[in-house]
Length: 426
Ligand code: ACO
Image 1: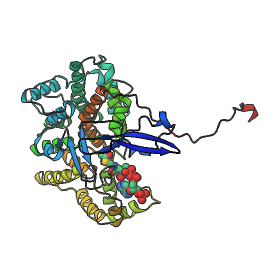
Image 2: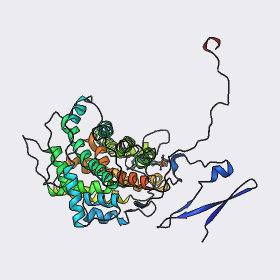
Image 3: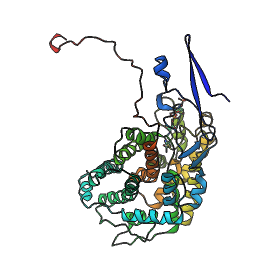
């Protein structure tokens, strides 16, 4: 088996080591390239660039495979809980019963937030986007809990605190935005049940926790729990590479996820489906616009940088969506439009040629609507699901013996040197 790739530039030859992953993924190690040749590589959008070696998540975009710590996501969605999956991602293996109990106790013990945080929430303008609020508030947590992690035990507390408090904070922002009383977390409820109860319970109308709704949320969060080196996760790693605290790194990840080309797509899908519904359901016009090179419109919830086949998460989400609506005996006109849109797109030559399939966001918005989550909170729901993945990736990067401050290069294309001209002489 080859262990080196040979690069020739002019009369200079360089041997570049090859790296193999456990699933046969291949890389060329170019870490000495610039020092030895003066060249850098150019890869806008990093589609061909590995930024780390990671043992957390494996995905194969051609096969439509996704595994957390080696376990297929389908099995976790079917059999695991979000809490257990979080433990798996962060600690690298499934917990024993005792470990899971201890983890539950720690989550419960850390789920209350400092009451002063309420003042912060109340002072955001009414129209603020919940992702902006969440990103700021997670960063602010560092000021409320200033002790820095010096050993494994302290790191575990900070990671668990984030998992527990961010869930509480998300529900707080929703309650405050509606001018409602806050609902406190209850130790007798599971992680998912607690979230739903804090979101929807009120003294006027007690919230009835339904098994199928809890299950839908559990699956939604498990499917979003990690996705290797995407825009927000790489942001967490990159910001974390400067050795900032975990709160700041996660806050940056939340900001990256907010974008409509990334986590914001679930909200964008619903807005697109609503627009189609308002135009009396003319989804064919949306397909034509998506294909028109002169129109910036894209079919939201379609396409993925890595998946060139059906996103495995989208398959599970679609099934979940059908089952949830049926068991709640709900109908959603947007679901009918989504189904028709998908069918037309999957048979359209443009979408076939460009390998464009539904991604996880295509059906997740309809699931969230059925749960009762307002559209403006959709991306927050994604962020809550992705939290264990970000934490696991941050932890892995901090422990990495090959750790380096992230510092990409560029090719400068601006002016050549010229002299400053004082304003009176211009
Ligand atoms: N609708 C129409 N055309 C599309 C779409 C789409 N949704 N997605 C990609 N294309 C086309 C592009 O126009 C381009 O066409 P061309 O080669 O003829 O110029 C080609 O497919 C490749 O597009 P890129 O943007 O280069 O592909 P990339 O891999 O960078 O894009 C992305 C991935 C950003 C997700 C893109 O597919 C997209 O914008 N999708 C819609 C937004 C969305 O659903 N985002 C959620 C992603 S999943 C997640 O983050 C959880």
